[in-house]
Length: 242
Image 1 (tube, one colour):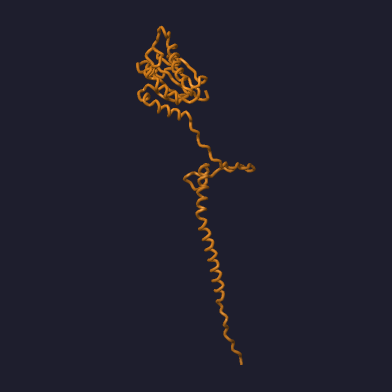
Image 2 (tube, helix red, strand yellow; image 1 turned 120 degrees about the vertical axis):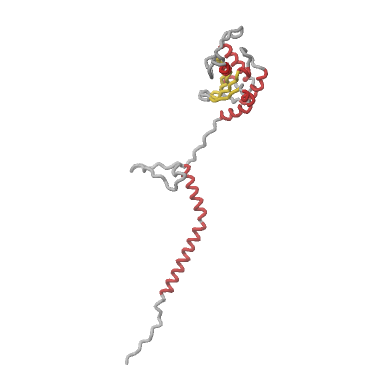
């Protein structure tokens, strides 16, 4: 008589328990990774912004591009030069610009009346004093009414080299005091220079005087207006290179 086999009580699905445990552990591992990544997201964003800003300043990346430009690599055997991370120095401000702005403030009424003009030139900053506001016709003495504005100008002039230049129109002059326009232009320049030297910030060794007669006009002498513009004394704040 054959013996009947007993049914086995061993479940063949036990592997599902181990698989479920593995999946649970793997899920927990990824949860920990995700939580760690979220805590550092702000720092990573700040780092990315800092790197992008630095590269933009150095011109490595274009401002509108997220990708670096294609560049030619150095030939084989030559070491690439390291990038300089130094921040470029800001452009220096021209100190003469501040002087010009200050002069325009202290002489604003005379500038508006057209008796003073302030302009840049190859030699330096030029303060043009028109004859109509400072001298009588054919005379080298400064009008008393012009002294206050000359004092205001002298007080703001820098301690630097300057040249006082006298100019006339092309109308000849021959008087007991001035034999020609050479003498008139030189005398007018000397009058202005002597007044400037009364101020302590003007140093005599940095002042020069020149008379150019009619030979350095700023416009044509063909009209009365043009001749009036040419009759002037220029205070030239010379460039340091001259």
